[in-house]
Length: 107
Length: 118
View 1 (cartoon, rainbow over the protein chains, first blue to last red):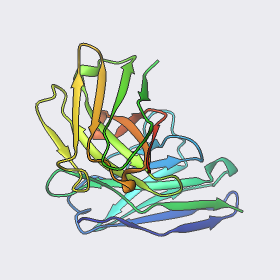
View 2 (cartoon, chains in turn orange, green):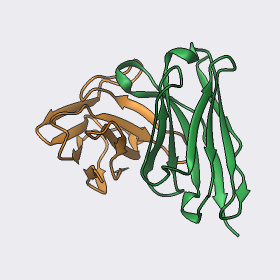
View 3 (cartoon, rainbow over the protein chains, first blue to last red):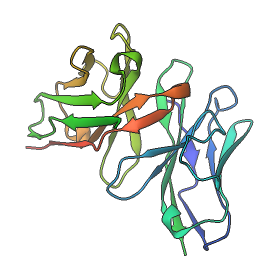
View 4 (cartoon, rainbow over the protein chains, first blue to last red):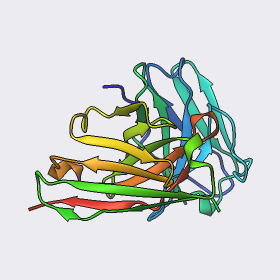
């Protein structure tokens, strides 16, 4: 089955930049979406179609794509950004898949 | 307010059945594709199933294919997940979510817990 691989964890100091990568064979052909999930809460969509931000999502969250790897960048990390982050895409048959998840810790 | 509220989660024995519901409000439910996503506490998100806007087309993850059915009642603004032949590994929080603009899952419910155990 199709898999999206993420770095398990990222630690970053406040004000620094966090980069989270997501790799998958089909990512050059399929859009990627990013979600933030805080403990005890449902996920929140923070990036859609590789690089677009929904209304209300801070500008410090950005997405980029290069071949089979996509990157979520959090610029000027704040304490409130500590959470789990998931990428999500689709395979060739139209079914959906989430990445393995990345835990972001703000030091 | 745009909202999704799941219900129906419970403790059920292996081999049993359960039907989850997801009540939508604050938006034109019949215009959107809907999905179910599950998450074992402490683990990652797993896509389960989706249904198109009029209910004529569905798809499932391989792990639930043949056991789960997704449906919707657009008159009642409600999404359903019928789960049969439940297994211990189906234990998870089940979320319903809306596929909004550009197919992003932009609205989520609070989740309902399904526990499969003897």
